[in-house]
Each structure stands twice: as structure tokens, then as C-alpha cells.
Length: 277
Image (tube, rainbow, N blue to C red; front, side):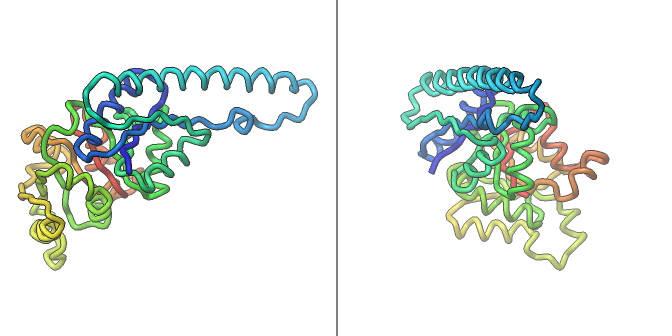
């Protein structure tokens, strides 16, 4: 049992991710792990068959080793300095995993209480973007994307529509919901009226389920467009996180036409996002 901070070797992002991990771990009373995954430099090299290129392979491998050493140095310093800056009373451990970051992240998400990625991981081209999408979409495991303001200081909001994604998000993140204490069930009743036969999509169905797990909750109506309404609700309630199913439509459709997940991931101001697909 632990909260895992995914580290990428950039001081600002690694410090922020570690702060989020510490705040959540303190609520859950579990250890914190800082995970920096880097592949074996030798296995990362392509086989070069020409005699002229033999020396190049060794030079390139050495360059990769030096680059990885720098990434490890920065990520370790950011994690250990951040963990050592407060009286949180938690066990903290830095882990260097010789593995692809995609596989390492998936392994961590299998049994950890939470795996937290930096906010930048939602953006294409960022160091942990491929790992974030792999764990969430390919491995089908839960992830937490760090928020942009003070972490885990208020209630959790559940974006509930009765969908498979929303159900998986709630089930996967149940330990976090218990730790949060206060839960708001957010729903767009206009969407509910589109399919009145699906009683499981009604807020009271989730509220009964949460009550069974000793979690108190209240319901609130989402105003306007769902993504924008959720963000406004979160800001008004000073919410710690939004728990939601990710990509109810295809990622391509959301990128072309927009969608709730896309809106939440690209918001300039947002709480942490606890997601499952």
C-alpha cells in the first residue's frame, strides 16, 4: 500500500507531483514512493550491423547513461528535498526502476493506492505523456493527474452518469474517496432524462452504494456544459479532486470536437483528476 509519485527528471514538476503524493498519502496514512523509471541503455540501442558504426554505438550508449544519471539526480533531489521539508511523519522512498516508464507505471498502478502523474503528463510531447496514456487507456488501470492548486484540501467530486468508465473510476478510487471524507455527486439531469430506464445512472443509486461503504455524500446539479460545469463546481467547493470516467468517446473524437475529458485535462485551473477508462 502506497501513493506513488511518477517522476520525470524536471525539478518543478517532480516537486509538485511529490507534494500532491504527500498530501494524499497523509490523508490515507500510507507510505510515499517516488518512482523514476528509465530503460536499460544497452537495450535501448538499435543493433548496428556496419563495421563503421561500431564505435558510434558505444559513444551513444555512454551519452544515454550520462543523460539518465542527470534525470536520476534531479528527480531524486526533488523527491527527497520535498519529502524532507515537512513534518508529515510518512515513510518516503525513492525508487529507480530499470524498465520502460509505461511498464513501470502500469506495475505501480496495479496495487498502489494511487499513482500520481504531473499535470503536464496530459499533454502530448511531455516526458510522461505516453506513460500516462498507456496506464490509463492500454493497461486500463486508474491514474491520478495532479491538480494546479493546493492538493487535497477539500471534498471529492464524482462525475456520475452511470457509465462503465464512471463506475470503474469510483470502484478503483474507493480508498481515496474514503480518505477524502466529503463527497459530492455531480450529475447533469438532462443527460439522465435521455435514458430514464437506466436507474443506475441516478445519483441516489451511487449515494446508496457510497453509504454502504460508510461514505457520506450529497448531490449537486452540473450547470451548463459538463466539463466547464464540473470545473466551476470544483472551484466553488474548493474540491480536492474530480473522480471521473475518461474518454467516454474515442480520443480522436474528443481531440477533434472536444469533450468532457479533454476539457478537464487541458484546463488551466483544476483540482486533481482521479480517472479510469
